[in-house]
Image (cartoon, rainbow, N blue to C red; front, side, top):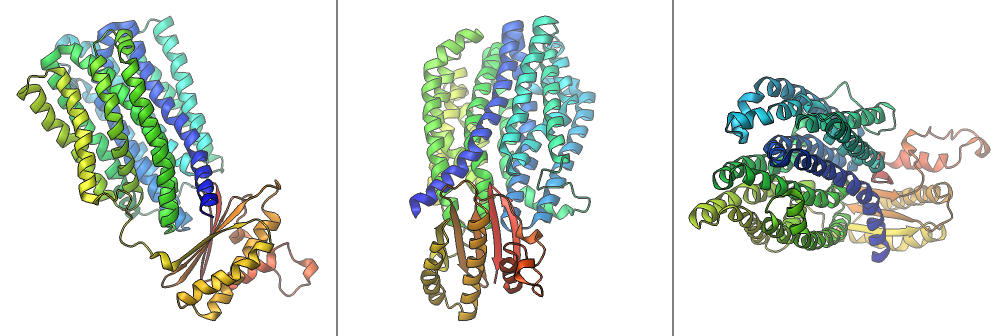
Length: 573
């Protein structure tokens, strides 16, 4: 059974991974295109301007993670619990708050962008004149830049990762076309790169809004919502966005250190390295964001087995990706140095080696945020993204006179130290779940092949489980009735391709008996089905109507959700 179950988890992960990988890598490619066009057409001045804007772009990641990933995790957990209304309220608050914050940032940034330039690292009048238009355009376009990232996360979590991917590809394609038109054809100054990026993000947002307004989404814009749901967003959202908040502070600190040790060329070099790091984390996000809705739903369903299986599969994929990145960066570093006209060979190789450690840190942090331990993620994030690198940079650059390379060595050593602290705090059990886990002896879980003959064979093992956990004979009968009626309906009417499918049946003996039935059949919501007319003749009833009616009558709770590609029935007896 375990091999079949692992195969189902792997198939589900693959459904999310491929579109998520294309989407996140596409956005990373768009960022790399920006700095590539800046370097090719404007030389070191262009690389300097794009590098100067890094804290602003990191700010957009802060908002995306707080409202997008934080809201996405909260929605997934609520979906796992079968609470559609609360999920829609979380979605509405997250998107509305993002839009409002984007408008506020555009107004304030547009008005005060000149005053911010020295803080970003533009110290001279010439540097400020060079970067002014670029920074101002980014601020003005902030509403669509922020919404693009947040809406992408919600569409992926809404069982449509392909639609989220399509929006990202629209961004990449339109950005490339506009860069060629604005910079290559029209010869606009470096601010044209920012203009192309803002318009490309706007087209993506328009595409996403059409999706949500078309009625295809399970999440709806809710007029009645409570601000109390912000706490559900803020837990995982703050832990995730703290990464980028710390990175913003660290980038400003590094920019100022490099300005003193290497001048504007030092900042330009760090811009190239930082965009390489952005690409690296896009690879990490391909895995972590694909696993996130699965972690969230399984956590909401209180299904530790599925959580651990997902972590095992996702972790293997990420380890392979990290090794590939390490080899790629170490081999390509000299060629990238030549392409950008900057000496970043050693820096890129140190960042490549750090992938072997930073990938694990990123994965475990994502796991903790999605499984109710955001506090652990906060601790490790501060150590990894601010405290360790800042202290080590001071030691290596000023204490040991290592110059610019001391900055990149500090980033590498910080990853190693953070992973070591993780091992100490978790006592080596990196994937340990919260103490509220249900004991294994109180959980019954099996896979049922889509053949009716297999249903009867379950009765003996279910009875033994119920007897061990003190479940009354009356409830045992109801459990068997629910499984038989629902499973028969799924087998008869849910699978149309003639292939082998599995129905995941899970019973939890807690204060109440929880029964979850999960399948990948065609979408069917039994809670929306009209109750059978038990007063009429058999020939007058809908197919399967009586069985569903019987289950509804004996269940204390009977809810349905379509999440992560599965029909999920949640029944409480």
